[in-house]
Image (cartoon, rainbow, N blue to C red; front, side, top):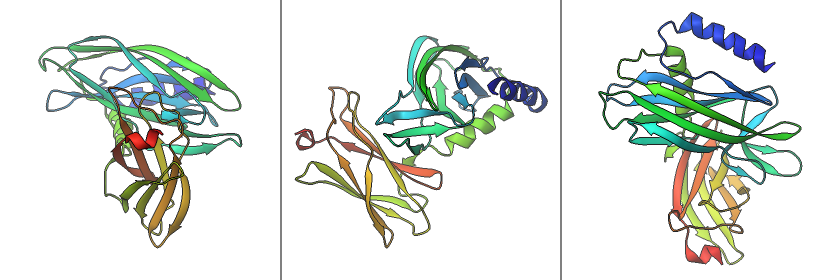
Length: 272
């Protein structure tokens, strides 16, 4: 199935994008494939690109934090030339319950957008990465790929890659309020739970995700109530950890494919 889809996409690329910017070949894994794509140089000298996952029907991969089970993407820069900044962004995910655990996932296909900022805008740049990730259906298997992409100020613009990147870039959560979503408060109770109060428009079905600092193993927030435009969530702080370099707890509130983000500093009393 995946080979048929890849063949179709290759043909579509040839039809829709005769002036191609750089992109890697697909690296196939069990249940899917992964590659790097670029829409070409931006006017300010940076490059817009993305890490694209394509899954067979029924398969999924994971958000920046997998939840109760799964392997989130682990992206390591192995080599770079003329690259000053590289930061992966994560579009809003979905909650997935397999009957045993809840995970935070992407289905079908997703592009994790990023922007390459070169040290010198006039010179070519190169990015080489290793990607390790989980991909699951009835079984879960690890996937890995070594990918390298060249960027140059004279690269052509790729309209198809640009549409794919912009599609998922639009779903990257930013600071709220936006799209009828707003964070109101985060409080801590004596039972060891964080209570997160949010505003959500009446016609929306919201969800809330949380990712702790590196080394944390926390569950998913549970919806306690949702009425009169107010949704309240409860999150256990069990498994929450901090490191010298990271003490931020990330909340992502979503509805109808859009979302907003809140970064909250982990307080000492939350770790008791």
